[in-house]
Length: 300
Ligand code: G3I
Image (cartoon, rainbow, N blue to C red; front, side):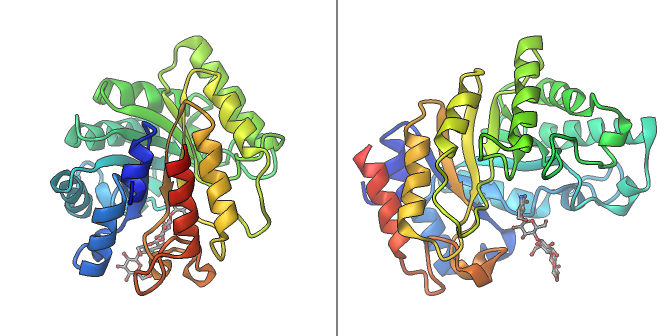
């Protein structure tokens, strides 16, 4: 196969990218995205500040542009993200206690209902654990009670039973880290108690130190809990070809690894553009990492 999406599809997987609505008018961008990827994640269009800028008043302008573009081009969508400590509108920041808990659940319901039946998987909760420890991140949501994540997943299942429900985080790729172990314990607890969760997203915003020998072990161990695993926001400084191929190989080695998403199309589109971490250069040319990833997919 001669594109990332079609090569991944040979293995029953997808290959996706983050898409920003502001770039859908750029023909170089849409040509590459349309050709190479078969899964799309809105990079900014579905954050809480974008979709509910005033309480109870939902705005889907940018998110709809991306979801419509995906539908017109035959691509599936990962919804990103319903509940995150970042990108919160001021009205939400000002709430606490029971009012915040209710607003949180209403947000999940409002956004998921708008997109009911159109989303492959939702990042229901994003980045709820602290770095360096096994503790929860001290966010406003967390201060409504330890059970906020469970409540969010239950509300999400009720709103759109067809969507896969994911927990998504970074720095959980190394199996031995306290953060990874804490997320694993939560997912294990959820699956054992019947709290609805279908997938775990490993963002994979990697540093330049490589490779990542534990990633495959981590993916396998989470998958053994009975959830899908996904690489959701992959980027690696300087885009070393061998490291990119190894990460994709780790997904290919795990039957329940559903697919890989890179966090942007061309290097200048990246949130860390100075690191040139993506598969296409500023002119839209394929970088060595592109070829390495395509070859890895085709070899599977
Ligand atoms: O939309 C405004 C624009 O109107 C304004 O002129 C401009 C000036 O700075 O800012 C624009 O908003 C920015 C937005 O990206 C769109 O470009 C925000 O300031 C900026 O904070 C935002 O950054 C995003 C970041 O999340 C924070 O939301 C990045 O694009 C996005 O790649 C990054 O993605 C996150 C994932 O969602 C979660 N995991 C980590 C990952 C990297 O931080």
